[in-house]
Image 1 (cartoon, rainbow, N blue to C red):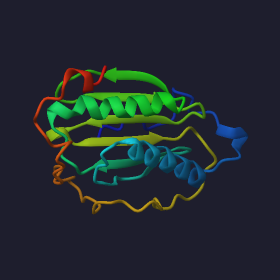
Image 2: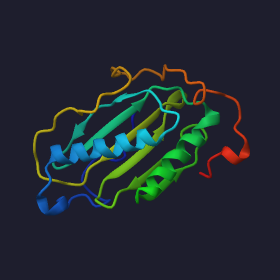
Image 3: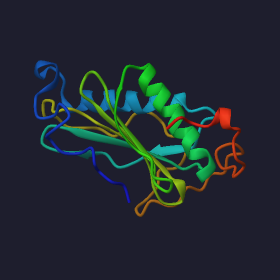
Image 4: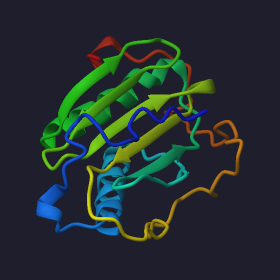
Amino acid sequence: MIATVLSGCGGGGRGVPMDDGKMNMQEAAERADFLLDGTLQAVKPGVAWSHGVTTTGNCEVTRRRVVMTQISEQRRGSFLGLVDRYWRSTGYEITAVNRSEANPAIYANSADGFELGLTFGYKGQAFLEAATPCVRKSEVAEPATPANAPRPEWPIPRPDTHDDFWSSTDALPSSSRSAL
């Protein structure tokens, strides 16, 4: 199940209109898509992913991506490390890290008030979320970025795409492991 720790108005810069109220929910959703797409493009080798459910509140939007590639326990640290390095290099502030072996996670904030999260769920399935700050109310369309895997139905299936690197249970050399 997806934890929606990023949704709702309140802390983390939310509750105050972003950009003096110039940005609406659709524009904020597009910005969230941009942040998620950039994160997925930074993951090498690439993974199969699909859009998760978009949720809206009174003044915010949460966009989601569901990784359908099987990421083994041995490779989760590398996946988290790639995302951590990308987010830091892009200027995001890392706000929390969950070092759980079974369900690790990392969270960050962008300078413009977006909250990002990467969490691992059952069987190593990765979920990315980007929650917008509070913006002007508007309608919100589905994401325009085409996914590279079919959109999962509820309940979300287990990851079903094998990748020679990400799904491998071979241990990585210590120099290749994440510092997370």
